[in-house]
Image (cartoon, rainbow, N blue to C red; front, side, top):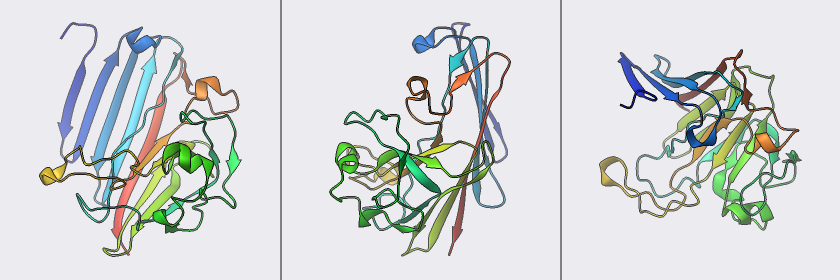
Length: 238
């Protein structure tokens, strides 16, 4: 340990607390940043993730969780039969390098409309420029919600097993990624390989490229403020 930065692991019963100190200038970001993330398994079959951070200079922060899910089980072939709901009327389209255009585009009449639960694979290969850019879904949805409230963002259902996962967040956006770049080169639980579209991510966040998009919610954290975020993944069976 060099005395300037550290990562501390604190483990309690059914809770893991991670702390990190990012010194001024690390990766080009201004300010000394103290960060804490708590993972809690609740009695309600939930994984609860709580984020906290403070800084001594104006800086940029936009934390998320990039876990992959497949409700069919570890190493199952595909997530395309999973049914997805996203509580969003709009999404942020991108250019061919996945950088948002700054537009909040309505989902109505597009393959990005998940306001009614439907199969992920039902439109993933549609003739749509945005899907071609990402080789599937890898976009940010603008959640329909009151600012900073913990509310339902998305729900995933796997019809064969009956397993369901609901996601709640305080964040204004959610990135849905359909595992378009998985290629079986990564092995997970039990040495199982993860092939193309065999896992999905639902990442609570502020919108990508927010520092360069004046109409997006700000990702600036100032010294007098606290960064606070909560995301909950709740598991059940229908």
